[in-house]
Structures are given as C-alpha cells and as structure tokens.
Amino acid sequence: MKDDDHVCLCFSVSKRKVVNYCRREKPAVVSLISECLGAGTGCGWCVPYLKLLHKQVMGGELEPDLPVNPSEYAKKRLMFKQTGKREASTSE
Image (cartoon, rainbow, N blue to C red):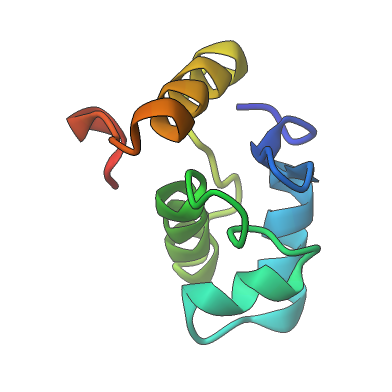
C-alpha cells in the first residue's frame, strides 16, 4: 500500500497520516489512533491494519507497510460490510 492510499475508508485516512500520527504522538495503545481523524471508528474494517501499522511504527520500522493492494483492500472491506465477516488472511 502506498503512503497516500486510504487505510480507513470510512473517514478517508491515509497510511501516511496514520504513520505520521504514530510517530508524532506515540500512542500507547492502538485505540488512540482514533484521534487521527477518526481512523478505526467507522465500520471497524481497518482496525487490524491500524494495529499492524502501530506495531511497525512503535517497533522503529523506518518504512511501515501494509502488504495489500488498495483495490483488493476495498473489495474485501465491501464484503466485510455486507457480511460482517473477515477473511482469515486479514486478521492480523
């Protein structure tokens, strides 16, 4: 996923915004990322991805990454919204 791709599709919060927020604010827990434009407070789809970014940034990774294609991410999120179920591969 590129820096300007949206991690939180409900509130259009990009990967760049989440990473910069984590670097600047150093949230002790993932749920505090919600202070970054509401990320993770809509449908909940992005929460496992926010957890992964938080872990990477807090672990000192210089180039945090979400190994997912943005269009596939959006398709899986739509399925999640329709069924309430997440594929096993997305439950980081």
